Amino acid sequence: MSAATVFFYLFSFVTIASAAMVISGRNPVHSVLFLILAFVSAAGLFVLAGAEFLAMLLVVVYVGAVMVLFLFVVMMLDVDFAELQKSIRRHLPLGGLIGAIVLAELVLVVGAWQVAPQAALGTPTPGNLSNTAALGQVLYTQYVYLFQAAGFVLLTAMIGAIVLTLHHRPNVKRQNISAQNARTRATAIENKQVPSRTGVPVP
Image 1 (cartoon, rainbow, N blue to C red):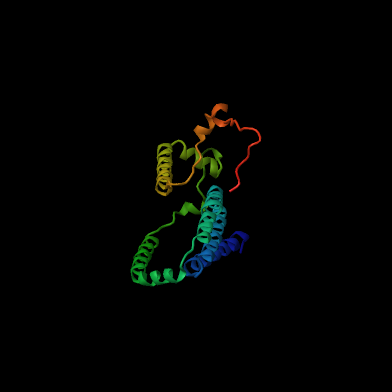
Image 2 (image 1 turned 90 degrees about the vertical axis):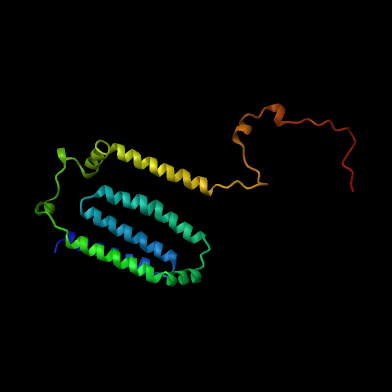
């Protein structure tokens, strides 16, 4: 058994075990940590498959940004775990039905899946390009319009999230950058003529 086969089985076992712990964990913080471990193991599988760029994206984007954000949100929110478990039990029959339908679809897809004989040899890239260079060449030439459309969709989602969560409270002082930049000496300094030998009366 080669080293690649050993690492494949190791990463596969860790990925499946971590995914099982994500859905069976009672503490959301532990579930997030197990999900991070599952992403890292999946990145190892991508490296073994020769997709280094996808492995880098999985670690940098999902583990380095998304899951860390989830971890901070879960730790900062005051979640009532008892009420959450009651809600899970209430929706368990519907969730089990949906899970059974998804499992049946996966079985049908895997049963109809066929492997090409030349797939084990790998797909040669044009001009002996690397995996990342070939992906970038296809993405920014053939699918450049779809790539830009996906960027606009993400930008719209980001603006919508900001608009929905940004609430201006009354009676709260806010910083006005334009007013501060337009301030002059006459508006910033006020001279007071105080008579000599007079003070503030003591009550």
